[in-house]
Every structure is written in C-alpha cells, then in structure tokens.
Length: 198
Image (cartoon, rainbow, N blue to C red):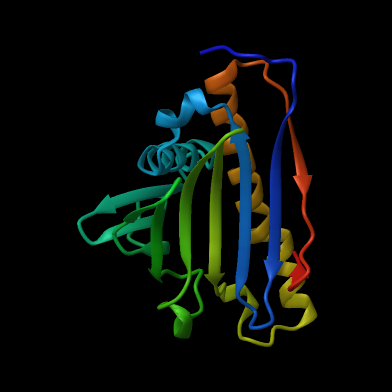
C-alpha cells in the first residue's frame, strides 16, 4: 500500500528512570487514518513478536501459551521476561493491549508483580498514533530502588539501548510496509521533566 513517501515520518522516543528506579520507555508515531485497521493492538503485538525474533536472529524467541507470553533465550525454558495473558481495552478513540510482567531473569525478583508492556492505537483527526510503552518495569541490572551510577550506565548501554533500537526499527518497518519501502523516517528524542533520561 504505497503512499506519499516524500514527507518524513517522526518516531518519537522517550526513556526515563523514575525516582523509584522503575523504567518508563515509550516510542510512538502517527500514521494515516486509512491504516487504522492494520494497526489494531492485537495485530501490533503479533507483528512485534515476529520482529523481535527476526531482529535477534532467533536468540530471543517469544512463546505464547494459555498462561501468557514469555521471551525465551534460544530453545531453552529460560524466560528473560514473562507476561500474563494480554488484556484488551477500548476507551473512546483509544484501543490498547496490556501485557503485565509476572517474572523473568531480567526482572528484579521482588518486583515481578509490577510493570507492563502496552500496545496502543489512538485515532484522531490527524491519523492514528501508534504507541509501544514499557512502564513500571524494574530491571535486574539496576539491582534495587537505589541503583548506583555504574548500574545505571550498564543498563543504559545494554538493555535500554537494545529495547529502544528494537522498538524504533519495528515502527520504522511498520510504517514502510504501510506507506512504501522508500518512505523516510527519523527519530526524535523527548526529554522528561519527571525523571532521569536514559
């Protein structure tokens, strides 16, 4: 479905370390309203999982079951991050699908009952804003609610960086699949006023 490839699409990115050392990471873009049906949250999740597997060369393998979803390492039973079954909701123009974190070796052991990964599509007169958001996540790399400078740096250079790249490239791929392979995109970073930028 080719469209106007002359206007550059912005992918906005924000990654924040909150005061309680939980992570907030969001990436979003607005696309034409004619693609609204192609970016429903369930479809976004399905395409995102395929993208993760492809991007990591199958080192990370999303596995879905009745008990939820797990990002597993290779063919092992080791779950990097696991989630409860998806919860779908609609409120006005906003459609969302939430995956609540419930375990995994990349999550602080005492914080497995918080955090979620959300896929959202919000219709408005300018189009549909697609957002992928990770919120209230407590990474094992940060260690505690009071991580030291080196732990913050390690997390920033590894897990935070990988998550951002995977998600931004997913949105860029999605946009080009909808608007044509030459459709230009650029990443815009937004700073936070409520926490430490990652």
